[in-house]
Image 1 (cartoon, helix red, strand yellow):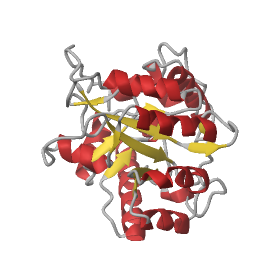
Image 2 (cartoon, one colour):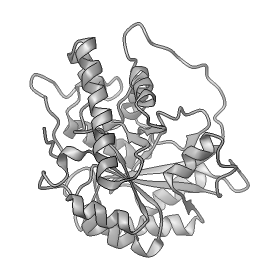
Image 3 (tube, rainbow, N blue to C red):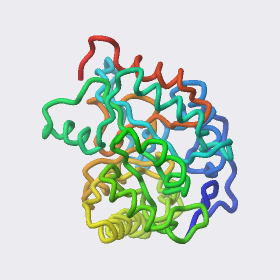
Image 4 (cartoon, rainbow, N blue to C red):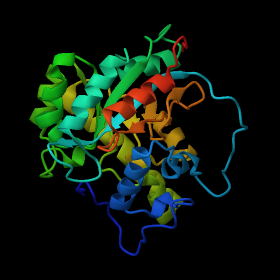
Length: 309
């Protein structure tokens, strides 16, 4: 099944969900989810939509809550982009002018763009320290504007970039890159190509719609098939996963570990800290309404002067 950027199947019989304050994320259409997430990110808020994703239990009897505690220091700020263009075509498109301001903000704050693998290695105790104001740049979905617009704009930086790809779209969907485009990006040495499942389903919703046995097979196939295809295509390990829509639960986190993912990325509009599970690292959703000034503020507030990881 191929998914257009603003659709998700199946959607028949589903509403857009209840009020924003108490969303049932498993019932939101992709278009509505993106619109609401983008609007809350533009306001600089920690979205209930995004935080509810991390709170979704694997079953009604498997709900846990963590005790409140002081927020630990930031380890890294992970940015999540999708599409790029001269004008805003949809809620996930960042204009070239806005992205130029983002690049300037990263430079002006003295941030250091690091590979996602370094952040994970640090969390695993395999890397002693991270540079000051560590930022990780990720781009989801494999939209053709990644190669047409984004790549030329960041080429001069030599920054490491992580692309999260769902293989069903590549060389098939009109909006997506082709395999040769991804090969060209990989050949630069600056791109890591990682998994976004095989065709980007809402796994939390699928769990509610399928029997436990059917869902186990379905979800495991989504995680394993994407990993296998990408490893075969690019000859490099696929160790990282981005949850579609940022949606996951404890059972899915366990499954990701079991099939060989070292870390998985969600959303959450907050810096990554030591308290975040490796299978649910939060990212800031980057949309056009996030100005360069706002990104500058996000970086400086995440890493106050004198603070360290």
